[in-house]
Image (cartoon, rainbow, N blue to C red):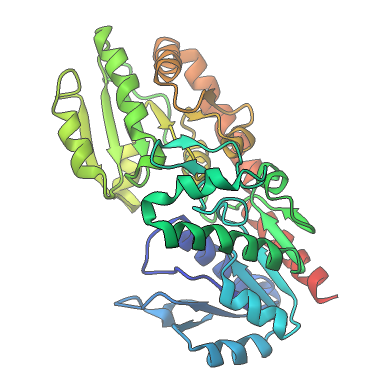
Length: 387
């Protein structure tokens, strides 16, 4: 089967979508390889410039920044078009060419004009104004981008919904997201984790000071400010621990300035973006991972990956996190720093509970995020689209 995968962003750009698309394409390219012939001939199309990235190292063809005419030819030459997110150009061209089109939803672009399900500039979760028909709230939410931009985002949400109602299949990584988008022909396929990391050997030696870790992009939607508030509460109670912040982003400088104020001073370490052995070493000394996101999460790769490491995870009670965690972690009300502090204290005071959660987390991740099962589920969707 000739499969065209369109992802606006791709390597060397770094992000969750880029990671997932690369993993999916590489995995599909290897399906059937044991029998000597791959099931899929894959062409990946992206608008990201290659930079120093070596496309020839990948087991599939990469086409970067094609013109509309080139994209049209590529779409007509394939059997199925897979669009990572409801990008307009490949959606429109695929439907015009009467090709089977599959959309995998990595965000909320079909139900929220800003794609985050977040009310700006307050930074609070949106209750679903667009789908409830409260369109004035959507326009007010995005007015910080200007009158024209706010209306453009609002109108494009209708366009995306119109197009996605006409594709062969809409894939969501959680059933929760599938219920929210309210589109026809939805298939819930959890993201598979390509590399199964060995457990980090939890718990850490008792002589070691507890380490609370955060991993993610340093932007407002990731909730690092809420985590700082919870840490302040614990430090006011004379708790001893280190907060390890892994990641980078536009808010790093302001967060570093905040960490210099009492009582945070001396308790917060910014590690920057880590990968490979450095990331493994950081988590080897971690006691608990906190994922305090406020919005914008449709799955939670950080949640799943650290469950697979066999670490106890505390996450905000966003619908995607609830589904991924199952009974393998603890939840707190989104944005509630006091409840997060209570859950952290509970884990730090009860090593037996932390160990039990770590074991359940790994087992849950192995079952829920099975990579082979994810690939086979995608293959079935493509087969059904062709038929």
